[in-house]
Image (cartoon, rainbow, N blue to C red; front, top):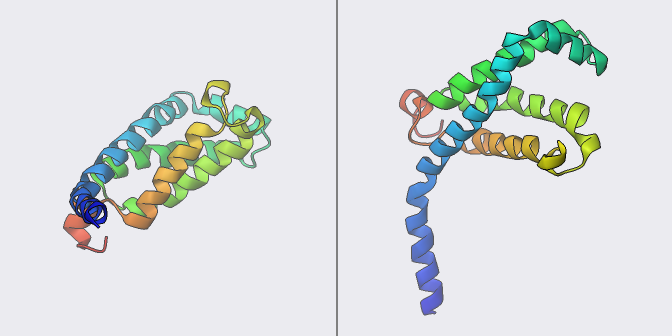
Length: 146
């Protein structure tokens, strides 16, 4: 009985870290999208050509859409603004990355596998389902249920 009470108290206290963990996770994921977004914007024609070689339809349009979505994701996740909304297109980008680039290489990140995009996708799903947390513009603007 003492073990159960100790665990329940530990669980209750741990919940105070929820918003901090969401904040730190948002920062980490935003940082992870920063370099790919800047790389795409730095050579959008090359990205469009690469997309074309993979058979992605409308490669130039999709290169601009991917670069714009990733850049918006960096800003919005960092601020915790429209977090649930931006998570959806970023999840789509991760799905495309997994199926078009990483899946043939297996799971391991060291082999250019789908491990890292899968982790990003899981974090984005957490943001989609849980919101940005207390330390966010979403909470400030939209209230508790943001």
